[in-house]
Length: 441
Image (cartoon, rainbow, N blue to C red; front, side, top):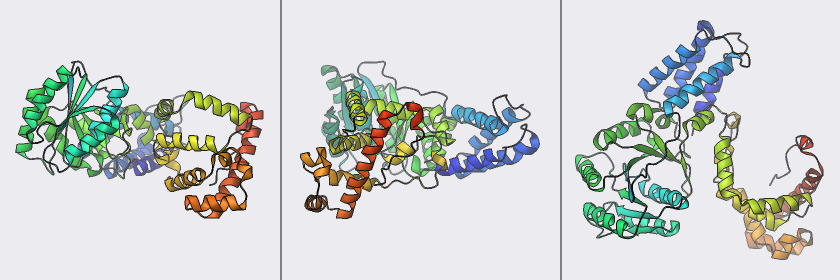
């Protein structure tokens, strides 16, 4: 999402390299470039004006710290201000009551229904008993969609008469008490635009349910219109926080950088993919480091810890050291990588990702590799050396890939095994001399 902003900010920082001190003369151009970068990213003009004033005030006349050059000092100041702009720390959802009601609001197409399911998955993982409530009776198939998602997550759902939102919410409240639910998530109706009738219905639902949280789901792709809409929702409903969706798309980032300042309410979650596990807590400091091209290693570590099977990882390590790694292990690794999300989203968390001009990753290549491996017999996966010409031909036909790809995969796999065998014999300090593994599939 922040590729263009990151690239332009980096140019601003470069303009300060080689200077001995941040001064009025050398800071002027850098400040101007930062300002233009934020405006082009669709950040609210007033927010940009205040942001620039704070950065300039902190930067002007500051002596370079012993361990920092002027560009590093300026980056440090910009990072602090970006973090401040987005809210300093992650704010968790409030579930003080039992049952606790979470009300999702927003315009049609923002992703409320999918977000309701994603939130229920997170809460279920935390040991909460969740009840989803289908209070959107206007959008065609909204209730059916929520039923399918509830089934996939494995949580209860209440649909009522499928006609009267207030009646559905009232009955769901009673059901939640009877069934000892911990959290009730209300999926309310949206509209293509704000209208008074919609807002009044939401105000009535709020009055009836007295929710602990009113989370507005916002499509980050629509820029400043989203911020203006959020302001109206907040004035009418007093929202407690925001969920930004479609951050994996081509949004310029203005919503994430503007909304806290304009409404005074925090971003609590961001959707990074369409998958049910594609909702993450929002950490302002981590987002700031990503914007500045420093990556988000903490989030990547957390994602890996939640996804990777530790026992499998230990067994795999032993196999690699003994050069016993086979296609069964490789297939398992591919599946674990896919659970982490798209390769592009993973790479974007690494420091320096913004310096790569084309970070696009051909996800289809992984699918092709998986198809080839799945077309092998178990014996072939465990002992790839037995795969002769006729077996290659059968595997190619079974996977729908050309035989040249099958041959290339087998050759590269053998090279990789040899490299892993060498790595297993080396001490950790020697590994950095090894260069890249020959995955070149």
